[in-house]
Length: 211
Image (tube, rainbow, N blue to C red; front, top):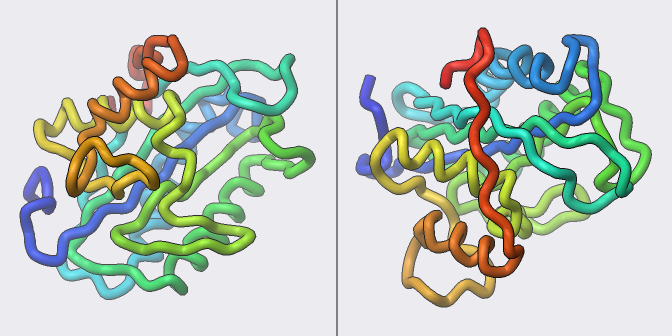
């Protein structure tokens, strides 16, 4: 299997952010993310119709990050990002079905939706899926906040560095510094200037995590 499909005609990518800061049925937040990894791969395998050839999964390292928004006293998060490549183009209905499946997986791991940006045992956010553009009360694609989140940018950069060429990510709304796909390093530099913070650093990989 090729390390990347990015240069093939019709290639597209899917990105999902994972986070947890409360214990769940699998244990601590980090244990939850380790348990979710194979389940999420199986879910994506089942939910990507019409593809030609294999899916290529790129997992980021795990990170620990401070909460953004929500109650001030909630614990830090464990975070990661999954980027999947395939030769296929999804439809809006596929994204909505995947969102429902992600919510079911969250519930399986004890997620309770009580308040916006509150603590949770598992959070799965669909960041983008190919060139899909969608804005509904339940789903916006691309996710409007992904370029503004250090806990998303750091894992994406780690994936990009490991594989050695750019991730196919959407052009952020309002970003005009570059034509075409925006390099993640440029977005990360803009985030550091705006936040005054350094990007989080990866954790040593626990047992059961690929990197």
